[in-house]
Amino acid sequence: MHPNPAFRRVEEFILLGLTSNRDIQILLFVIFLYFYIISLVGNIIIIILSRISSRLHTPMYFFLSNLSFLDICYTSCIVPKMLIHFLAVKKTISFNGCATQMFIHLSLGSTECYLLLSMAYDRYVAICAPLHYTNIMHPILCIAMATGSWVGGTLNSIVNTVLALQLPFCGPNVLNHFFCEVPLILEMACADTSFNKTVLFFFAMFVAMVPFFLILITYCYIISSILKIRTSVGRRKAFSTCASHITVVSLFYGAAIFIYMRPGSTHGVNQDKMATLFYSVITPMLNPMIYTLRNKDVIGALVDLVQKKSGQTNDLVIHTR
Image (cartoon, rainbow, N blue to C red; front, side, top):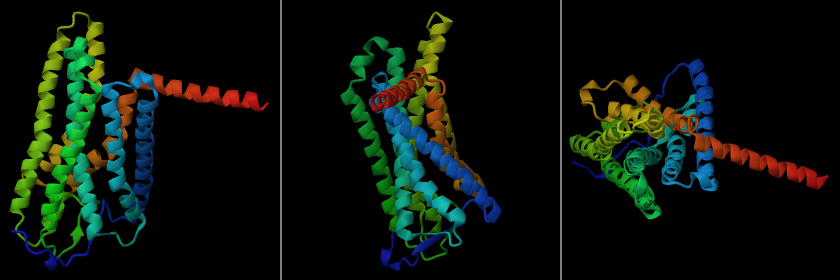
């Protein structure tokens, strides 16, 4: 099932990327560099605001800052190498680099599933049991949930990555993708990978689908509670606290399910690349915008920070005069 790694001959993989057209590659370099900068800036701002603003010292923003840190790591795992390949003639990645990229990507993707579930539970308690929110969402519980998310995601990645690395890779070494992803790497092995694919599928069910269904159940209770609110203003206010999370869950799970939960015979390479690009690069860039554009607390904290910095600058100018 898992031959001796000594038989492995492939030392590097060639990534075909998104296109072979040189002009389009230059254009994509500019576009994705812009996306990457926006993603970094947006997520770093959320982390900073969550740390320094007292109005954001709540469980919701604790989990959001975890998600922002995860998104920074997510894009940094993929985009820098992709940008280099847009400009490089030889688009290769070493075997160890590919294994590292595969491990980090799967670990972060799994962790995000658990974090989104934790955020759904936070919204459930806030709307369905508001009087007990402070007692239930205790800092210790929040830390435990966040830690469990990271540990669970890492364990899933360790199992699937280690199993994949036990396979022999004798060639070919050409990957029709822009980064190393577990399902595609398994296709490159010159051995029977049915066991690996079965393990990957069941882990995908446990790590992705179980949290997804729990999120759906949670929102059934949330919606039921919102509908019981007598005033339309109260219903809108309650729903607005969940709207951002619902949007993020829809974007992330929509693309992830498209990639991992379809039968292998229905996979299309270009479709998979676009879906992976969406949840690995585009969604991390959109998350800060989704959580800030209609969020009065985050906008207020950002305004406070700007005014504070502006006041400090003015004081410094007056003092120097």
